Amino acid sequence: MNRQDFLDRYQAGERNFTYIDLSGVNLSGVNLQDINLTGANLTGVNLSWAVLSQTQLVGVCFRRADLRNTVLTRSNLNQSNLSGANLTKADLRFATLKQADLNWAVLIEADLSNTDLTGAKLDQINLEKAKLNHALLIGAELMEANLTHASLIAANLTGANLRESRLTGANLKDAILAQSNLTEADLNGATLRSANLTGADLHRVVLTGADLTDAVLDGADLSRGNLTGAYLLKTSFKKAYLLRANLEEVYLLWSDLTEANLRGANLRRADLSGAYLGDTILSEADLRDALLIESHLIRTNLEGAKLTGCCIHNWEKSEVELNKVECEYVYTEFDYTNKKPKNRYPSDRDFLPGEFGQDSPQDSQLIPVEFTEYPNWEALVYTLVKVADDSHELELMIQGFETKPDGFLLQVRANHLVNAKLMSQQILNSYPLMKQKLLQKRSDILGLLSLEVPIFNAEEDLDAIPEAVISPAIIEGNNHQTLYQEVSRQIQGILRSQEPEKFVVSVQRLLDFLAKNGVELEDLQHQVIIQGIVQRAQKEPLFKENLFRWEQVATPSERVSLMGELVRFAIALLWEE
Image 1: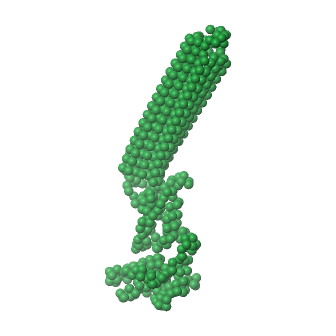
Image 2 (image 1 turned 180 degrees about the vertical axis):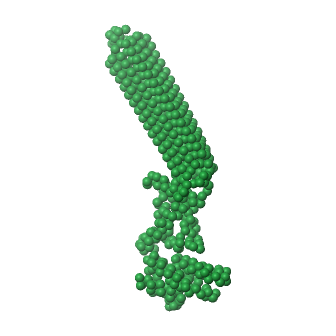
Image 3 (image 1 turned 180 degrees about the horizontal axis):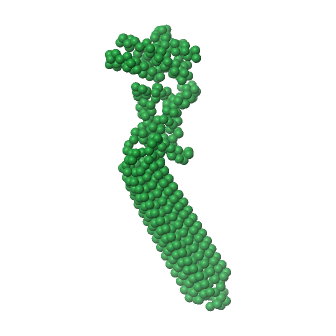
């Protein structure tokens, strides 16, 4: 039938043109709304810009037809043949194309939103920049299809075959791709947020830079896939296969990799912060420079894995064997301000083979801090607060304190694993400056706290001063050098820890005790006592003030005692300065 006869019959009100032959006819721009062309032969027909909305086109042959900008909304094209047809910018919203043949068809920028393409054949179809939002593509064949920058938001592609298809920059947010075949598909830069890819075959898939935040890939096979730089935040990979997959620099924050197999995977510089790795296989995986901040490793298999340079800040591990990993050093903390790991451990060398799997006193929660002089406790407390504030989520608590022959040992407990050696050095480096600041501002601090500088009360406080203790064995041994060292150590401790009102009494008791036992150490007077008083006064302005105050309030008996004379001699030296 020619064009004019067909249009005349349509204008006359006829709508049933089933099995009509209009092959090659030019019907560009015509309005054929509500027509029934079931089984018609429209091979090579020109229907560009035509309107065929709500039409019956079941089983129609549109092979190589020109359907550019054609309106086919809500039309029934089930089992139709559109192979090789040009549907660029065609409007197919809410149309049905079940089991239709669209192989090699061109649908660039076409709108197929809410279209039903269940079981359709779309091999090598061109859907570049097309809209397929909420479309049904269950079991559809899309091998080598071009879906570059296409929009498939919430589309259902369950069981679809997308092998070697191009989905670069495509938007598949909330899409369902369960049991689909995406082998060797290119999804570079694609958006798959909250997509369901359960059981999908993604062998050798390209997902570089793709966004799979909150996506579900449970049981999916991504073996040898390329996911470099992908966003996998809170992504579920339960029982997934990622054998030898490239996951370099991926973001796996808070992802679930329970029972996933990542044997031989490349996870260099990957961020697995907060990730769950229960019963996960990471044998022979490359985790160099990866972030394992607050990650959960439960029965994780790391045999032969490379862990050099990874950050293990506050990680949790249980029943994990680390003796067979390859690791030269790790970082125990993360600088959130500069966004990089810190505190290399070991700090000055590399691990020996198998050493990382051994418990190390340096890598612990207990930090030993050695002081050469008795610390100012107020300054020490502020120092610990400052050090903790400089480290993210770090809390420090004083665990114990004891006197050693050559100084004082402070035990500090951290709330998570730290490099004890580096943390101890940080405390010691911060303490002097904090002490200086505190002494300069102590009166202001006490004022802000509504506190007063405590005044020594002899009637109440003298009984609290302990008696000096010198081992009888040291005295009886008649070893002058040993006795001198022990007495000197005790006196230095008293002078560093007590105020003048108390140390005058404490040291005098010690000297009286020695005198009763026939021990005279006159050289202690200048070398230890006077020198100790002067040195402390030079370092602590508040102590110096208290020293001068003592001279004004001391009783006559205190002033004429041996210790009183030594204190006044030290004060005289300070006045000369």
